[in-house]
Image (cartoon, rainbow, N blue to C red; front, side, top):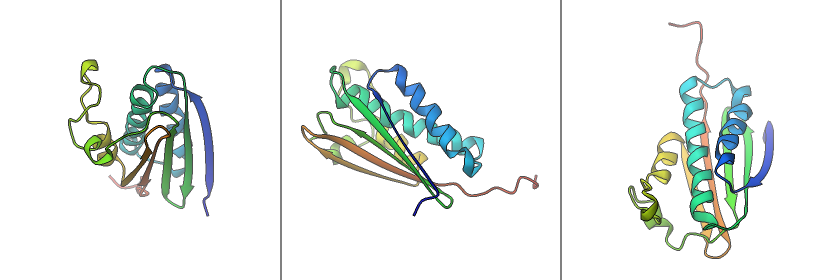
Length: 146
């Protein structure tokens, strides 16, 4: 059972990437994250949402959903789109692979998510969309030290 949860939906427009970062940051504040943890979470959310905007809907309008759950000292974010899906998840997760080289994308989105979060799972079905689940444990830091 979780201590807190939220769910938001928004259009797949690039301005909403910033919105998603702010929502994720505000949601985890009750866990009193460090600035580094907050930055890592915001970056991972940004990468997941950007992937959905650029790759998920391929220039057509769609909805991106972010669900957040807090379990004790762990936060979970689930980013979902109902777009085109990923035909080869293992290939898409390779560092430097990009499905849109013409956009000069770095191909590091999944690698960044995996680096900044403790776990990441990707589920995708061609023609139905993609679901990325990321979790991060936020260890309490004794602020009286140092």
